[in-house]
Image 1: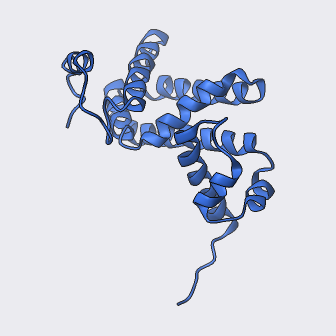
Image 2: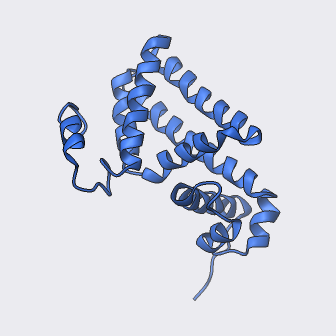
Length: 183
């Protein structure tokens, strides 16, 4: 059997995908570069050679998650440049909970100044993209992000999404208020 060698760019993408998976499950403090290396099928020194520190790897994973969301929104806006269209695209992203969980872990780690500035920049970039693509006002964009954060939190708690657990009474009542969450 012939093995195909990955290019450096493909290997870096593989490491970032493994980092997103590991950090989204265990957070910044609870994840080691060794865990990421094992998920990617490479050595831990190789991870450090490419990213230098766990912090740089974490930030690359946050940037990857933000870039995936932005790309999804841009495609949605090509079809229809509205908040509703971007919201529907985000609903699709909730089926990839590691992306939204990765951003939540980024927000949680933002108290560290070296992490906080890049995470705020990533979030701010997403905010500006929503305004750019839809023409939304600051208030409309705020409400869009507030609702999206609620969905993100519900997904992280497994109230919605691919690994949802049976809803508790409070959740069932809340979920009944959403018009287009299912389907």
